[in-house]
Image 1 (cartoon, helix red, strand yellow):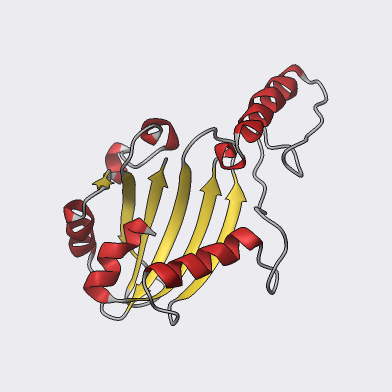
Image 2: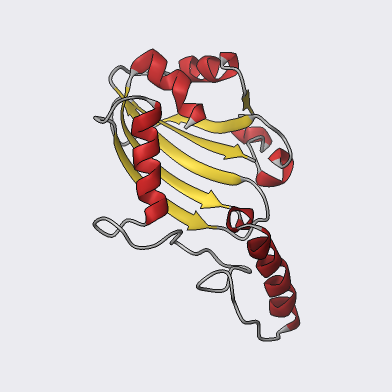
Length: 180
């Protein structure tokens, strides 16, 4: 949500479509341990009994974090809706979240698409991100420069990259975000 603050201040966010890829550390030490032990077992071709996650996390993605809640959304997804509206003090912001547990130890990543009231160009968005305290921009697709959990782990900033205009509707901006 921090990465969206400068965009909201400049162009008022109307809608957010976000998919999160959350690290096993989000489930605590037990989640990290299950990824490590499950990976060893999978590589050795040995069985492993999951105790933290509902499915094998090693070499897998689990598209459910939290319990089933409203209209097919999970508790983690609804928390994202409510937190976004609360932080921006705006219940009119529409949020469509999907939360996925990913086989990485640390850092949550997000693919974010925002629709704003007025159009923001990539150059404007990049400048807003660069000038906002606590955000670091890593954005050069041709050079393979964008935020990765491995390089962002242990750092306090929110990292943003893959900034691009949405080609499916006006006033849309897509970007990738990683944070420890």
